[in-house]
Image (cartoon, rainbow, N blue to C red; front, side, top):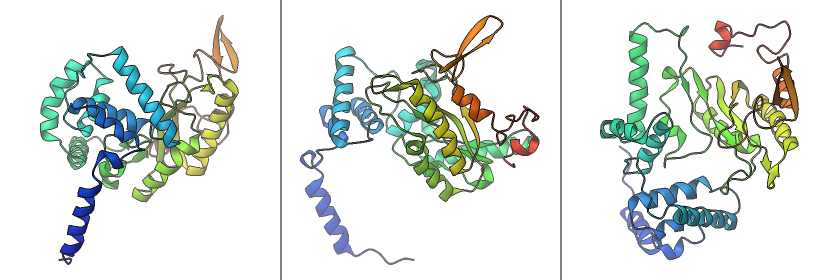
Length: 315
């Protein structure tokens, strides 16, 4: 058994906590906006906004958080969150589920879910249970690959490492990342290296499983306008970053949704492609990198289909 800590140290730390756990010592920090609100759900929203915008100079972060919260208060003075949750982890899970169905349906599911799964360890156990159930049912690696894929930025109050179920239960390790550019009040332009370098280094400390980027994309909005050249440069830089990080699989999110993500058939492009009388907007930069010989299906003589080996991350 390791020796117990010196009680004098514990007493000293408690004293520091009592002294400095006060809002007067928080400034300047985005979390100071939590003191605006008394209700837990309001504080959760403020904390979520503050954490999402916590990138760049503190002064600009404070300005952005204040503007977002002021705008929300003006537009939705009597708004309440329809999702049921009691902490940041539950909010994160509920928001992810709400992308697939109605909030009402999510609340029906999470009532039982949150009573069973309260910590990252609980979700790890659930992943392992499902993995074992599929294996016991005869679904082998030739028909199913397990991709553990967090977001590039920590959310929900826990680091991504806390959710890793272990190499025995993972075939691919993935990470999703998006550059919103200046398309939102809370966002700034982020090059691929800014998005992926740090989180991939952390993932590599966890595992040497094949690395994937199942979803990625960039807006074209930079410096207050649609900059198609900047988006083209970002596309090329993304594949250079993936080469340097040994990313084996990547999938562009080709849907104009929150912003103009698409590289083919979207609202904008650096070139056009005509087929059967229909003209599509496209980005030549993506065509160029996708046609490289080292990309599966890129060479003229290559099969457009995945092999069993590449499906399992063996190239």
